[in-house]
Amino acid sequence: MSDSYTPEAGKISKDKFPEGTEVTVGADGTVTINYPDGSQDTIPGDQVVEAKTDADKTNPTVPGTKVEVKDPNNLTDEEKQQVKESIENANKDQFPEGTQVTIGNDGTATITYPDGSQDVIPGSQLVTKQGSDVANAGDAKNNGQGTTASIQGATADTTAKKLPQTGEQDASATAATGLGLIILSLLGLFGLGSKKRKED
Image 1 (spheres, rainbow, N blue to C red):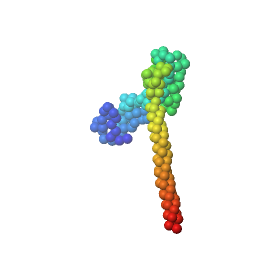
Image 2 (cartoon, rainbow, N blue to C red):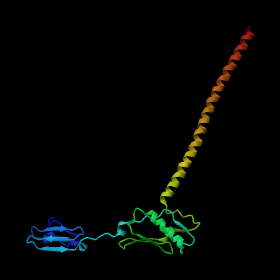
Image 3 (cartoon, rainbow, N blue to C red):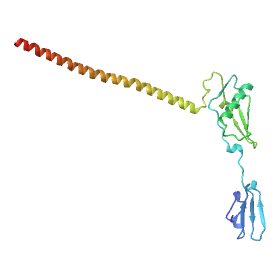
Image 4 (tube, helix red, strand yellow):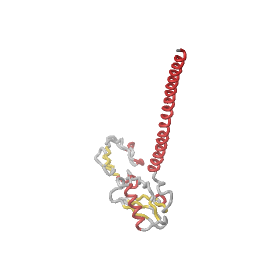
C-alpha cells in the first residue's frame, strides 16, 4: 500500500512520511509502516480501528404477540420460559450462536451475546396482564392484515349485494317492458278482430 493511506484519528500522517514509505494493514487492523531505509513502525489494530460488538451488529426483533401473564410485575417460571421462547423464535435467524436470553420478574429480557455485549427489551413490550385487550398490540403485521381483511370483506359483501340487486332491477324492467308490448299486441289483435266482425 502506498503512503497515501491515512488511518483514523490522524495517527498516521502521509505528510510526515519520507518519499517511498509503504504502509500495510493487517486483517486485525494492525498498521505496519515500512520506511525507505528498511526501518519500520507498527501501530496495533485496536488503536486504529474500533471493532463492532455483537450488540452493535444485532437488532433484536420484539415478538408481535405479547405473552399474557397473571401478574406483569411478578412472572412465574413458566411464564418467563414462554417469554424467552417467544423472543428466541422471533430472532432464530438473527442471534449469533451461543446467545443467552434471560427474563426478569417483570418480563424484561436481557440478551447476552457471545462477546459479552447485551441488548435489553423492556417487559412492557413483551408481556401483558391476562384478559387485557392489548395482548397483540405489538403485532403490527397482524393488525395490518386484520384491518385489510375486514376492509376487503366489507367491500366484497357490499359488491355482492349491489350487483345482484342491480341485475334484478334491470331484468325486471326489461321483462315488464316486454310483457307490456306483448299484451298491447294481443289487445290490438283482439280489437281488430272485433271490428271486422261488426263490419261484416
